[in-house]
Amino acid sequence: MEVQADQAMVGYELFGSSSLSENDYFAGLQGSYSQGQTMVFQVFLANDSEWTGLVLINTGETTAGVTMMAYNQQGELLDSQVIDPIGAKAKQIFLGSSLFSSEVRSQIAWVKAVADGSSWDGFSLWGDHGTAVRKYLAGVRAAVR
Image 1 (cartoon, rainbow, N blue to C red):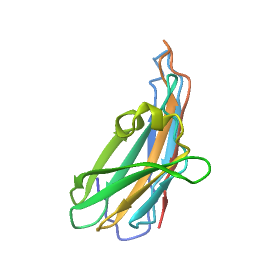
Image 2 (spheres, rainbow, N blue to C red):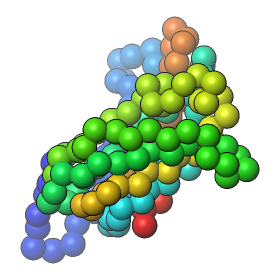
Image 3 (cartoon, one colour):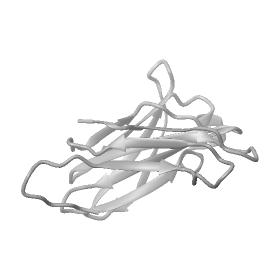
Image 4 (cartoon, one colour):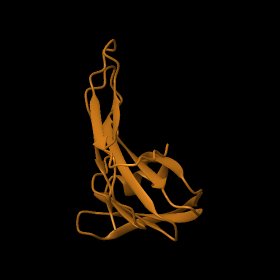
């Protein structure tokens, strides 16, 4: 969704469980004021008990491709994946478990996304899974350059 106004605005994206649910999780992210072609996702958890979702938002006017690169704690490149181009004003969501192999996922500390054009923003969410009741959800905006 794109919102235009004649004065400054602040927006939030909220995620969470229903108050009627046994699940007990909530996360909120402030809307972004930055755009660029490089995004760094500082947290990556993808194992038997935790998941990570990475969200790429093409805020620009043109379709562009993105390369996702996984790094370990020492800053060494583990793997890279070129994803299908994402259209202008479109969003794409990726689960960490679908981007990289299980061998690579177990070593990933952070992920960098580099676009070949347009303007971008992004954020990540992570939480628990594999239990009857989910207890946590967290998120952070990508560092964008």
